[in-house]
Amino acid sequence: MTTNNEAAEVVTEGREPPPPSKRAGIDFIPPEIVAQILSCSVAMLERWRRDLPGGPPWYRFGPRMPRYLRSEIEEWATSKRIEGPRMFVDNEPEEQST
Image (cartoon, rainbow, N blue to C red; front, side):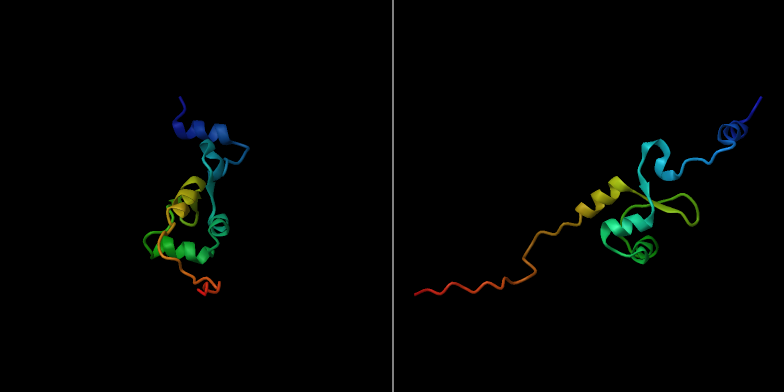
């Protein structure tokens, strides 16, 4: 009788297991891609993971393998919309009353 570990070794023998981004149809992406999507640096993502609250949600697949779900990145980014006073002043001249 084989154990679960032995069965897993037989199934994956001779080929590499799929990367986390391709398992079960879930779209996990590395920090480099997330940084491009969010227009920030990989270092900023590291700071969010390590020190700053409120960063995008992430998953750890190993000690040096953080990954993000694409759908959660999109949801997190769109939740950051700020509605309020305009930040910039129009350069249009005011209408003069005659």
